[in-house]
Image (tube, rainbow over all chains, first blue to last red; front, side, top):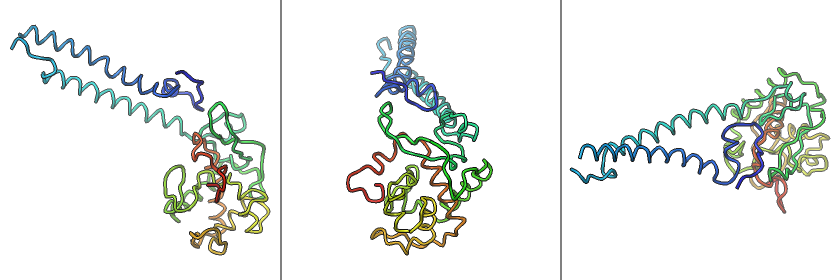
Length: 50
Length: 217
C-alpha cells in the first residue's frame, strides 16, 4: 500500500499520495468523519426537541 | 414529532453541505499554492548546484538533456547532463536564455503550433507531440530528420526544418510553411529544448521507444 516517495518537489500532498488511492482514502476519511459528529449533534437536538 | 429521523432533517444536510463545500474550498486554494510551488521555474544557480526542479531554469539550454528510465519512478525522466553547445554556444546567461525562450514561446503561440501539435498535454494530435521533441531519436546524430535537413547538429536541423517545413516531405500531413524567421526558429528550438527538460511524470508515455515509431510517437 505504501510505496517509495518519488516526487521531485516535496509537498504535503505528495507525502499523502504515496500509493494508489491513499490520497482519495485520506481526503474522504477527513471529509466523512465530521459528518458523524454533525449527525450525532443533530440527533441529540431532535431528541431534546421531541 | 418524537420520532423524526436525522436523515429527513434539513439542518443535518445544511451543515453537512456547508462542511463539505467549505473543506473543498480550502483544499482547492491550498492545492493551488502547492501546485505553484511545484511548477515554479528554477534558476541558473539551481542548475549549477544540482538542485532538481520540475521545471529547470532557462539556462538548461546550455546543457545536454537525455531521457533515461528511472526504475524508482517507473518511467523515463529528463536528465540534465554535461555542458552542450546550442547554436555554437554553451554560455547563455539567464537573461539571454530567458529572452530566447520568451521569443520561442511567443512564436509558438503566434504560429499556433497547438492547432496541430501537443505541448505539455495541450493541443492536438494531428501532428507529432512536441513535449519531448528535442529528445526524439529522429533528430539526433544519425537520425532521419537530421539527415534530411543536411545539418550537423540537432538544433540547426530543427531550425532549418521550422523555416522551410514544406520542402521536407515527412508525412502525408506535411507541415505548412509558416513564415518562421531564422531568429524565431532559434527561439522555438530553445523553447522545445527547455520543454523537453521539464519533468512531466513520464508524459508522453514510451516516447520514441515504440516499435515502428514515426517521429518519436
